[in-house]
Length: 120
Image (cartoon, rainbow, N blue to C red; front, side, top):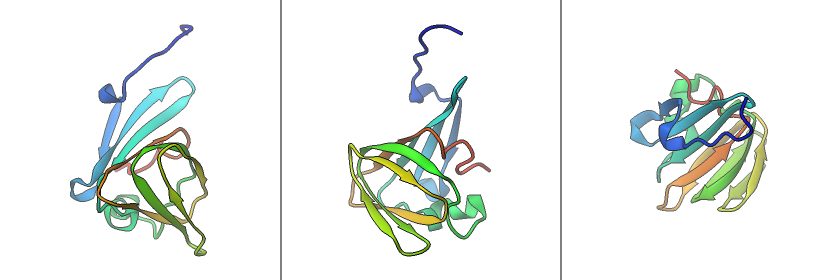
């Protein structure tokens, strides 16, 4: 292992597209685990663009990450909700839906929940 590892999401180890071309997940595999950058296009909604891939009624991933740009609404199965905006850290437990708000793509980094996210 080297003392410094520097990589680009533009050369990801794996790219997982969402349904209907509504974004993608760029995944880097590291010795410390997977790290993902997701680009969610305006109009993206988990229940429409990832649910067919996941095969579950709601997103069952545990997310820990950071919003780089754009806005996203997250609604838990119990109705609790949050608006995620640029510069915010987030932790989201399994059992939720989410969608992009506004006309700007939402870009998020996640170092826990993307390892199996949108995996065919």
